Amino acid sequence: MSIQKYKALLMTVETGSITAAAQKLGYTQSAVSKMIQDLEQEWNMELLSRSRKGIELTSEGLTVIPAVRDIISDYENLQFSLASAHGLKQGTLRLGSFASVSATVLPEILKSFRSKYPGIQIQLRAGEYGEISEELRKGSLDCGFLGEDEAAGFYSIPVFKDCLVAVVPKGHPMADAEVYPVEMLPRESFISLREKRDYDFAQFFDEQNIRPAVSYEVESDLTLLSMVESGLGVSLVYDMILKPGRFDVVRLPLDRTKERTVLLSARRGARNSPVLSLFMDHVSEYSKEKGFV
Image (cartoon, rainbow, N blue to C red; front, top):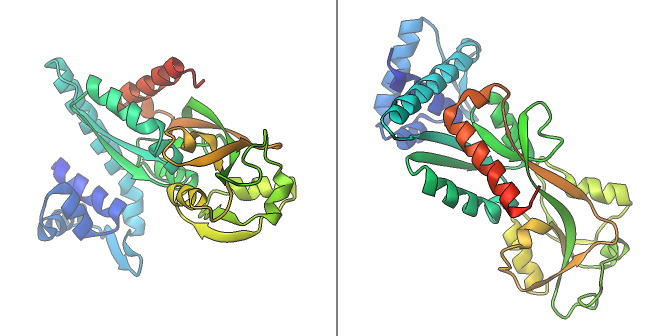
């Protein structure tokens, strides 16, 4: 059994491309193709098919890929145990995160984790709640940051609590107010964050029966804040994204707000992974030290 062949197959499935898998694994494209062909001959089945979306698993491939993931996970756990026996801690953690975590608390978490465990590599993947939860279920991620609804069914630990706030440019008529009235949004030039699969903002507007007058729609929190800073309009963001203080905007509590709890989640049973256990314990300690939970 060659673990590299299993890794080549799994990486091809996760990236949807033999070329991308080869780049990530440090092989040539022909080497990855040959490893997958060897597995298909050995198992007497076709594992992959090509479509407009890229490379996808066949029905037979879908049947065997969970076992392939488990074999790779068991191998990595064995490698970690062997390294630990020699006084080392080495391994890989695949982590999913969304923008307001990646731009605020995550760098500090990763820096302190790295200082303790320099031999553990972190593979960070960006996405929204829905994308991260889907990748967790597939086993493409070891753990990821999620909201409470999306974390249902996973093993989760709370990381921090957050709430929606208004952001307005300096010089705005409401800049000196104690709170921002939600009812004002339809009369403002509103900068909206495009939501691909998560609908926190849309749900909040439905609950409040409010329809903002959208002048701009953007895909990035940082772009949104830069536009508010430039005086192009107002918006709503979760408070955590403002913590580094990189943007010269005015933060105002809402008269009616929405709260969320951000959790770090993993598949139940995945806690058997030593690297995952170390990271989740580290994040839990970090949150308590910071008074987030």
